[in-house]
View 1: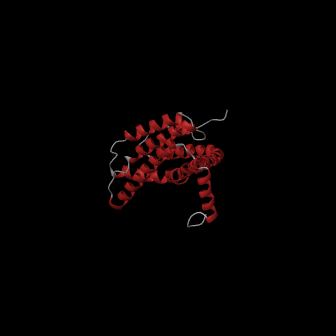
View 2 (view 1 turned 120 degrees about the vertical axis):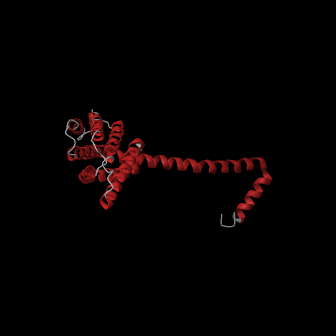
View 3 (view 1 turned 90 degrees about the vertical axis):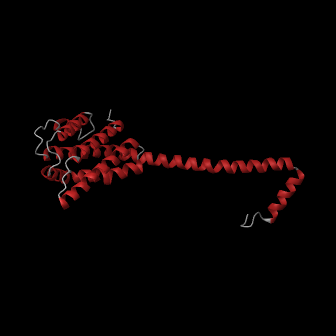
Length: 220
């Protein structure tokens, strides 16, 4: 068939078929149209399934390493905050937080919750000294947060279907950016108000860790 329609011989064959046995010819034409209409969606479905299978194979190779990296960065970031805030005289959350650093562990959720509570109990969170301390904590944990949000999150989005973990990391990234923006404002015009982002950051980290536990499959 060219751009202008069927070749002349095709038109002749079609006309002859309709004259000799119009009913059978009509059935054949309809069957051809149906096969074409069904064939395209089926082909697309098969290709889509194949691509998802390939993505699953790729993720199966890097998924465990990615989960371990997320756990390590979350714990390291939290520990930097715990030891970086002078007003926190209670280091008890460190042990459960560190328990889940090398591999995901539910105790870390408890440690992160305890850390968030300690941060919220710090007096005068809105003063400038607290904001200065929060900035130093952010600087100390920035590399871990950057790895989580700028490196591991894109990997999850590309290869994984773990949507709850992806959503939790996106929320963590949002909180990180809010902290970063408040830090810039404080450094430029001394606004204060940076410290209250720290417990929010720890809460977001706990949400990520909880989602991580949903997908962690320890070796048997």
